[in-house]
Amino acid sequence: MLSRMPNEHESRCLAVARLLAEEGADFLLATPSTDLYYLSGYGGEPSERLIALLLPAAGQPLLITPQFEAARLVATVPFARLLAWGETDDPIALLTEAVKASVKARPRLLVGQQTWAGTLLALRSALPEADYGSAQPVLAALRLVKSPAEVDLLRAAGGMCDRAFGRLLQQPLAGRSEREVAELLAGEMRRAGLETLSFLIVASGPNAALPHHEPGERRLTAGDAVVLDFGGTYRRYQSDITRTIVVGAPTEKLKRVHEQVRQAQEIGYRSVRPGLPAAEVDAATRQHLVAAGLGEFFIHRTGHGLGLDVHEEPYLVAGNRAPLRPGMVFSVEPGAYLPGQFGVRVEDTVVVTETGAERLNQAPRELLVVG
Ligand code: CO
Ligand code: CO
Image (tube, rainbow, N blue to C red; front, side):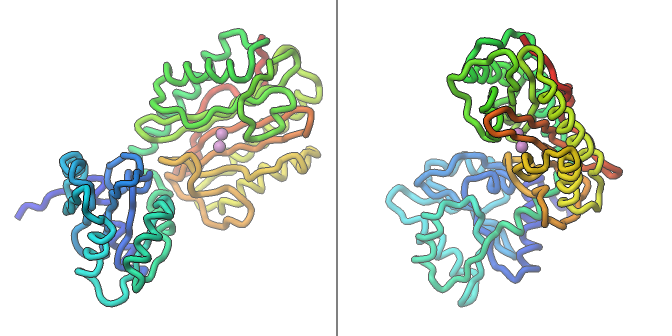
């Protein structure tokens, strides 16, 4: 007998089923989110009309969908059994019946963290006897290590950021407002191939001391450090890069702080290897900045995982002893923020390889002077 090869999404659902069985859980519920996209290939936005994938520990996945979306969903998720509801039906009641039909008195149901609280609250009223838990450990365990195909998309997205940065610097920036620079950069990001823009920080002068400053009306003037932190998606996979540039000649202080942050970033990147606890990358960048007298100005963790979400596991932060594994993708982004003066951050996205790490951003990291 010929057996059909499961596609990528079906394989992920089978992996979820194995983890559910190991955890003694009966179902995982995912609603429109990056989790659902990861599991099914369906990438729609959440809305008041319930779409939900109910993955059992054993048996066929069930996809609950509004009737008018059914044709689209059956094509996208061919391995699931479809349960369509009409505009006057109660989809929560259908979901509850589906759970009760297949499982004992007290089903254990894991719910993704990106499911709307309203959906979960409605489900809890309709099915109070179930035992609810977080699906996050199961989903994070799968999403944490990227396949070679996922790494290819992340590498492509990273390269698009590099190109956008290079083209931005070919234009005069002095005298423009942060908002105008952000618009120029957004145009370059789209031209470079990014399909959606996820975030765009342009922080100049004292604003650069605020790690998540939103671009405003301040105009770039001579001597300003400018933090450019931006990313977007290519085929749904995210990118995230930061470079700090200077308008005209930098002060000695800015040159010194930038060089220390750049070195910390280099040291962090070079520390990455399989088996190293995630916290050790944070420790490596932090020790360098502490030794340089900048420890008190490095006010955030060193990095975050990146994939379908801009922030996901693993987090490079003190206390995270989880070992790095080949295929993990995360940012290495130390910074130093001097309140009221300036800030510097240098960030690359990197992937853990069998022997160390590969940067997914190649744009120059030194302090570049713009006019
Ligand atoms: Co960033
Ligand atoms: Co980042």
